[in-house]
Length: 139
Image 1 (tube, rainbow, N blue to C red):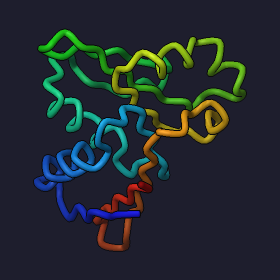
Image 2 (image 1 turned 120 degrees about the vertical axis):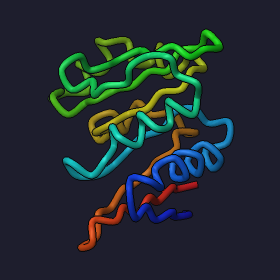
Image 3 (image 1 turned 180 degrees about the vertical axis):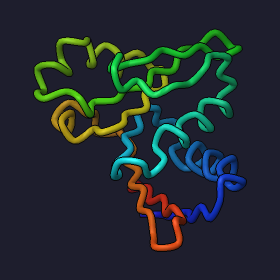
Image 4 (image 1 turned 45 degrees about the horizontal axis):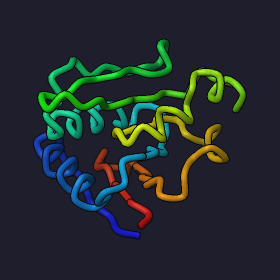
């Protein structure tokens, strides 16, 4: 377990670089935290550092967004907040996405726990009393 403290939005690029450096070759990343802690904001910066040319937005209503990079790779961004069963996750073809060898960033992954591969990187974001974010990566 390793951690990185983000004290302001100006440090977001450093946080994203830290995530990418520490996940290594593992491209499946699950983000655990409460509402409003900054999952999508962090994922936007990570995608930017992966040379994403698409507009990164929350997939709250679409469940999954696909972004393209300048290198013609795909990045998949999931939000399972509105889903109520593992079957719904299976029905969107989740296993095909996570086996695609593309980056997959998952918000609200709790319902998908049984489907996540062993190499899935888990990041917890905690917000402290000063509104700092503590990113904890379980390696």
